Image (cartoon, rainbow, N blue to C red; front, side, top):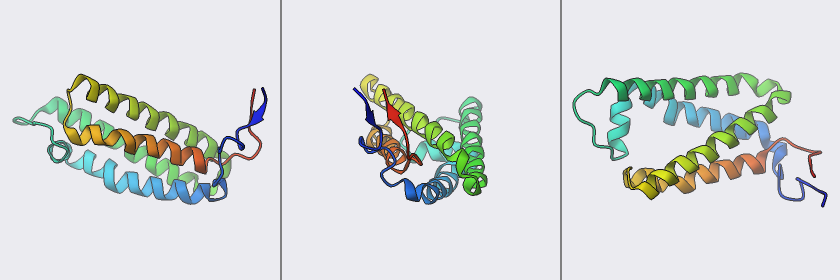
Length: 143
């Protein structure tokens, strides 16, 4: 069976792929990357995690994740004038968002996370879906 991925909805809003990347990068930088980099334990408390006295490992991992998010966001903003890079970024985002969907689902199944983290399951999946719909594809085929 051979059908184009466009027929399956891939990139149906691809004409706006650059704008989607820009909004996602700025949002991730301001709402996730910088707060997690600068205030990892406050971020954890805001989401309902029980945080004891300064936990240096939690601070380290939080800041590391915040820096990775900042770096990806800045690299995305730098790529906005280079559309040939966009499919790579979209693929990376889809993988990250689906992996986060799985991580949060696993935490919910194991009951090892605050409720706010469980509520993020549809959020991460929706972000992956948005990336799929805005994917900058025109001639993809499957099969």
